[in-house]
Image 1 (tube, helix red, strand yellow):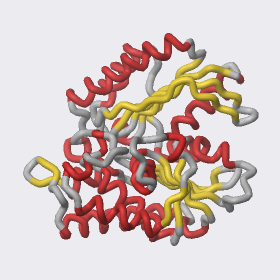
Image 2 (image 1 turned 60 degrees about the vertical axis):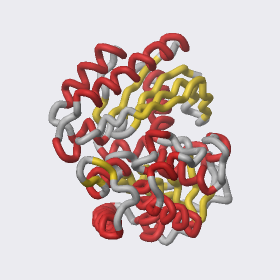
Image 3 (image 1 turned 180 degrees about the vertical axis):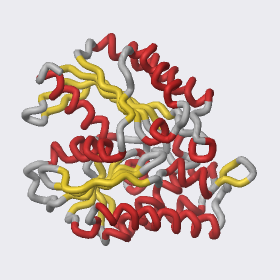
Image 4 (image 1 turned 180 degrees about the horizontal axis):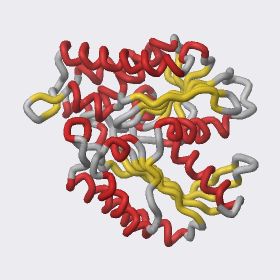
Length: 320
């Protein structure tokens, strides 16, 4: 097995995985897996630039991660950056900062590359399960974008569209500089219309309705699962490969969109960094399930981060 480190830097969070990986068998053993909310995409949808304070939060997390990677002795590090850094006019500042701290250049990947890595991470361990029909539709609901990938043993089609929990919140749920609590019916209607338009775009490329199993990734989906299970705290083992029915997702989404900041913050499994954006993220998930006609979503804690780790191990084995 090869010891690798993978970093996934998105719009809302930056995550680290250090693992021992065998890319041939698909075995991946976690040594350290963690997430920090840095909100790198703060204001990007409006300004087109990464804010100085958002960059500093991200660099602080990178410094913490560098110490962990060194301590665990990873043989290879791969750093992937997604939606916010793709969109920013000053992304060179971000690239230089990461290189100074971690010694590698962040790969600002395309939406298609992001989709393929997410699919690999989410489905590698599902191979051979007879209770989950294929093809899979893997949906990764991030902060700035959502990736849709259909495939079985390999990707058939993928598309990234600009709907995510942070982007939808900033675009539709902020008035006078702060999040409306709770959002108004007009705000929810406008957000829903934006999501539906993005789903139309996704469906031009990806046969959403042809999938047999919906697999949902990332914090909005895992948080909905935690709420559905009434977990007393966020529990990765309980969430991974849990199944949440459409009716339960609808019930939770409607509740979140009716609630105040204090009510959402009081949910035991809620990460503080998701309190203001979980309503939008849940609505994206609900809209996808309605478009697909899915009766349930299979929730995966393994996602693009695991896909990055598998790719890093493959490259190490090939001597790249």
